Length: 262
Image (cartoon, rainbow, N blue to C red; front, side, top):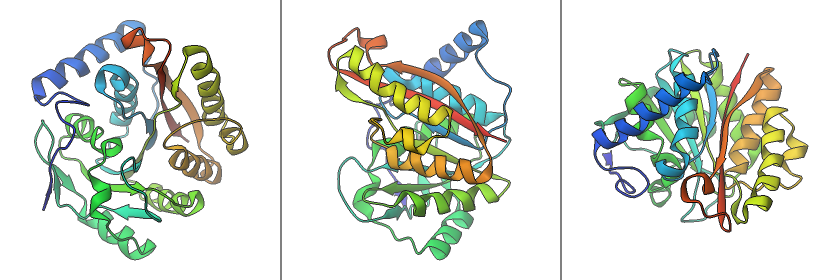
């Protein structure tokens, strides 16, 4: 069974050549500005808006992940369309992307399903927070295999246990999807977003709950719990808002990317 693209042509271009132009442009900017850290990371936080707004931030995280040499990923994102209890484990065999099909990791899927008693809520998986990651993964890791997890009303500690397990496998990585504050003016957006940035940078869970507005805050918290347990360090990679692309400073969405490493 194939997961068909649901937001191609809106959140990201439907044609591979157009997406590739984005990625090549971003990479040129990184090289010119010398912003790519020489870090090997298996856990990142990425945004999930349209590529015109947040693609630069996401792409830098995937460039860092590329250094890891791994090709199995668990992609974790919040549900925007429906509410449900817990975490849904997608049971698709392949995921359609403009760069070709991305394969499901049958090993990871089976292991997570059995170890954490996860089931699939099919309605949860036409979800843009995870789907916008798939073209990045297919482009940078041609032979990659993934598992897609979407959560709604879930427990961050339980999600952290899943992350702990994935990171215990040397050839696997974790991709946490979230945007930051939504629809404040630029001044308020940056104030609220700085709380999130500080929480991530310092792996400070209490700070995360002192005003951070993020649609994927539960996933971020789960990763911070795991990072603290595993003794990981965090590095912020990029922060920007929709105003950087649109010029609209009155109704702003914030975006960040970060990586975690030993």
